[in-house]
Structure formats: C-alpha cells, structure tokens
Length: 272
Image (cartoon, rainbow, N blue to C red; front, side, top):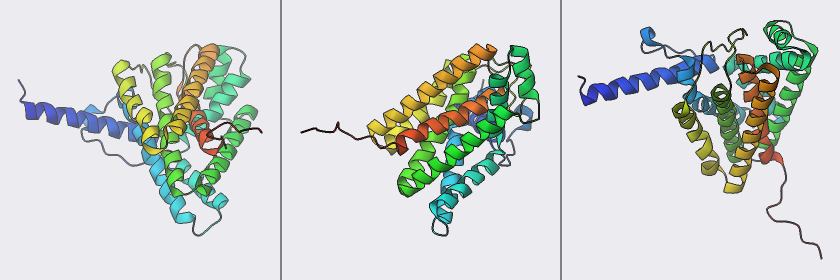
C-alpha cells in the first residue's frame, strides 16, 4: 500500500505528464516527458488544452509588446499572428482549411472525409483560411489599439476558450478514426470530470480579467460557436475529426474577439 507522499507524488507526476502531453499536441514547443513509458493519452491531456492556449496567448502578447514601439499596430498585429502560427505549427489553421474543403465541398460523409484527408488545398479551404487569418489580423490590431491590458485579456480569454472548444467537441461527438489529420485522436473520449476540469479555468478567467458584462459576452459567444460547430459537424459527419477540432478552435477564438471590438453602449441611448 502506498503512503500519502507516494500517492501525492504519483498524482503530481501524472498531472505534469498530462500538461506536457497537451503542450506536445497543441504546440511546437519541445517537451521531454517525465516518464516516456507512461505518456498520457491525448484525451487525458485535453483538460489542459485551455491552459496551453493561455501560454500561447502570453507568448503572442509578449511579441506584440516588443513590436508595438517599433511598428504601426497593423504590423505588430501581423507579427503576433505569425508568432502564433509558428508556435502551434499552423495546426489549427490546417484543420480549418481541411474542414472547409471537406464539410462545404463534400456531398456525402465519405467524400467529405476524403477531401479532409487530401493534402491539396481546395477553393473552400483557401477562402476559409484567408477569411480567418484576415479577421484575426484585424481583431488583433483592434485589441492592440485598446492598450496592453485589454490586449492581454482578450488574447488570454479567446485562446483559452478556443482550446476548450476542442475539449467540448470531443465530449459531445464520437471521434471518427477513419479521418487522418495532423491532430489525430484515435479512440479518444472524455468524461464529465475532464470536461468540468477543462471548463473551470475558461469559465472563471473572463470575470477575473474583465468586467462581468464583457466576460459574459465572451462566454456567450464561445458557447454559441461551440454549439454551432457541434451541430454542423454532427449534421455533416455524425462525428468529429481532428481537423474539425482545429477549425472549432479558430472559429471560437475569433468569436471571442468580437465582444472586445464591438462598440456596445452600457446603457440604451436616451431620446428626447
């Protein structure tokens, strides 16, 4: 029978390995597992996806702070965008492009999966990728223009909720093992404990960093986007693939930027 210190050490070791697993899946950051004989399954590491998203956001923010005194906001935003792509290896952007090609261009489940596995970039994928990158560039410029504090808050919240969307889709829909992608989770499924753990930080974060109204809008935007992605993937594939998870992360992140950018008055205008 293990002693309490041994149990605590075993628990911490598993959690550290889970965090490292999430880093190795979602980023290009070199990660050496503490125990290579017990590398956790991706579905076990999924609870740390939002935390990894926050790390990417923090690195992106730091890059923006360095670039902003040297370049106009649009170029600083472009540098942040490029930095994020390099850190993640364009994982989510690749998934977005493949998902657009497959789900929009395909007419049957089989043809959609085939299009998503095709390494060639189709028209829908190119248009979807162009739109997403352009929208993100403009959103980052708008955030930078509002000051370093709101810039950091917007990045942390949007990236955390964007990565949580992956956890939510894995929880809601069966993973289709027949679809090969850079983000492959064969046989992955998660339970209520993982979804609750994964949602805790993204749910609290908006109310810690911004006012309750803005935080609620961010959560609402993320919730609607996740629901829409789950509904669309279920209608088109009756499940989810790794590419769908990448697309969900990108679309949810973009949706969370909207409340920071929209000029919504706190009170209705008075008419006299």
